[in-house]
Amino acid sequence: MKMDQCPDVLTIQAVLDGEEKSEKVNQHIQNCSSCRQVYRDLSGLVSVAERLGSEAVLPDQFYKTLNTRVAAKPFPAGLVAAVMFLFTFLSAYIIDPGYIQWWLSAGMTGQISYVLDILIDVLFLFQALGSFWLIFTVTALVVFEVLILNKLKVAEG
Amino acid sequence: MQKMLHDMVETYGDRIYRLALRYTCDSFQAQDITQETFLRAFQHLDRFDRSKPAGPWLFKIATNLCRNWMRDGREIPVSYSEELNQSSAPGPEEHYLAKEKEKVLVDTLHQLPVMYREVILLKHVSELSYFEICEALDLELTLVKNRLYRGRKMLKEALEKQERLI
Image (cartoon, rainbow over all chains, first blue to last red; front, side):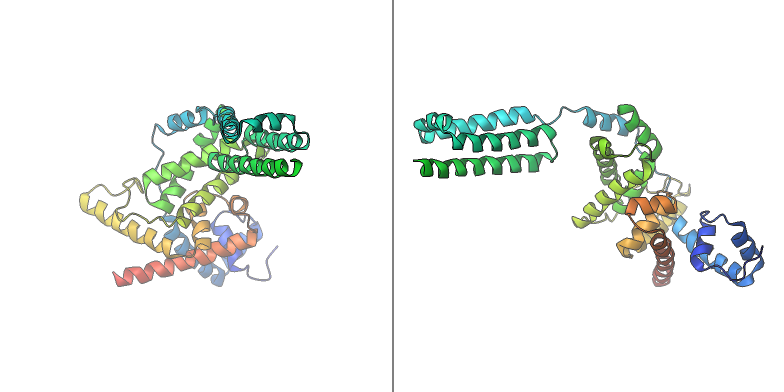
């Protein structure tokens, strides 16, 4: 079966790139002088772009280095969380030794603190963020938590 | 998991490296981008649909890393890496001329708008099919064909202009 119309330039390009396998189109290009000219012009464009092809290969030690990075110990989230908790705890104690006692005994304050701590733990556990943003988010949450506690301390007397 | 990573590096490592090498023209930067590509892939293997080939997904990560590298305003080094094309002619003069021609070609490529440059690199350096380019760049097939056609045309015309100037 013959094609009535000449294929567009993108279809001829697809033939040249080995992406268009239609027998009809291929036969048409072979038998049509204007399509053959388009094909030749496109071949010129392709041959220039093909000069970009390279035979460079990764160095031998590439996989070894990658494997070392993959096997590297995960970010010590638990340790950082413990240090941050201790830091907050000690800061609170230094600011006001009675604060710790109040913190432990406060009802509402304790609940808010509990929710925020869970959020921090979840962030650490899932490590959904990169190290920098993880530390940034947790620090922001700790600051937010301390501010809220401070407000509530004032409100609760 | 490690076996899967190893297979990915075996199949796609060199092609991703070549892509990064054409973007950065620096073998150390290119190795770094390739390492980062596989590291990110490994970290997010759970997001990858294992019923599909890994190629387009890996090239999507690599292309994004290359885009970030360019966005950071990194400059292409004046002296091109020896590794850019290891099939250079044997004699010193031929080797020099081949390297000069390659430098002009890569310079010209880097003058093209990114959207054309990306499809040309994925097609001719990473040897991806139209379908794989569509997947890697999240583009419609017609758009890929169009950009490839226009990009190749622009590259040839710009190169001829450069060579006339030289």
